[in-house]
Length: 173
Image 1 (cartoon, one colour):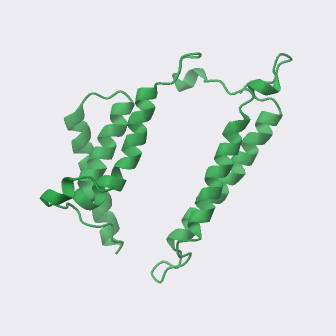
Image 2 (cartoon, rainbow, N blue to C red):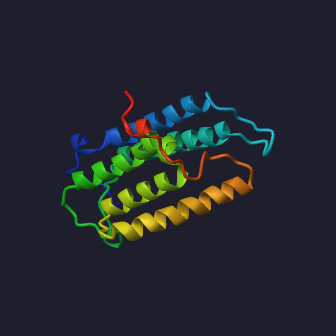
Image 3 (cartoon, one colour):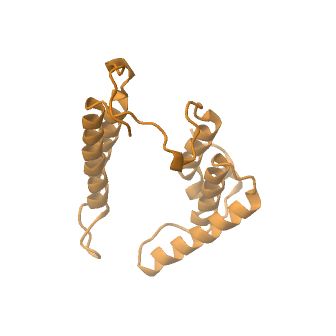
């Protein structure tokens, strides 16, 4: 980040970014109230983690607003391998958004491992990978390891692989 220059004006500052991070943190905090904060097994429930993430997002959003108020400029660094001034790839963004939404539609129908494989392959595709079969295999191995690891701890993530019924493949509205 660079020091502010005399030519900076308030219109060029990304206030929306800090506000968006704070709002997302607020949604996480609100969502954590719907989850149990404690558990009988580990004494820390899922609500505790969601609350911690929400609080962290609010704090970092506030720190981001402080940096913006000081006039910090946010530009890609050479180490980030980004080309300054080049617009973001909307196709890559759309692919990642689709990958993030995939579990909503595939987890119950196909199971944890196939969903993990699809999400991993779609995300790597957004980052430029063109090796679909390899990405699906890596995603399936990672999903199976996660499933078995959580199952060994007694945490139920659903079925490893769910064979869908013919009616399950139709979209639900």
